[in-house]
Image (tube, helix red, strand yellow):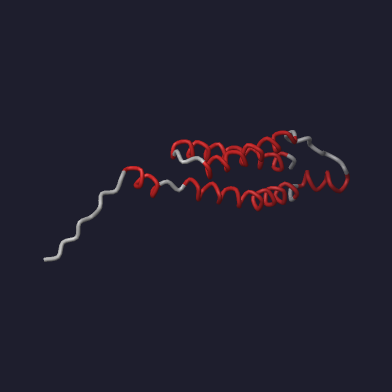
Length: 113
């Protein structure tokens, strides 16, 4: 008989294998620009936005620009934290902050429709 001894894996290695927060952070960061363009096109396709563009009537102010700026800035900082920090729990919290910040930034073009 041939037996092979398996080396025990440490809990840190097991949690590293299961934690996909870096992958999801990069995916969210890369998909932000297409999502922003899609939100902009969706906002422009409304009747109110087309009337505002064409005739300058019924233009709504929407959300202020600082919401977009803070959302993008906070999303970038959270993405850097996810990529740099070795602690799994901190990465997961930073990923949640990144997703919420990017969603807040995407609300700005949608609010102009």
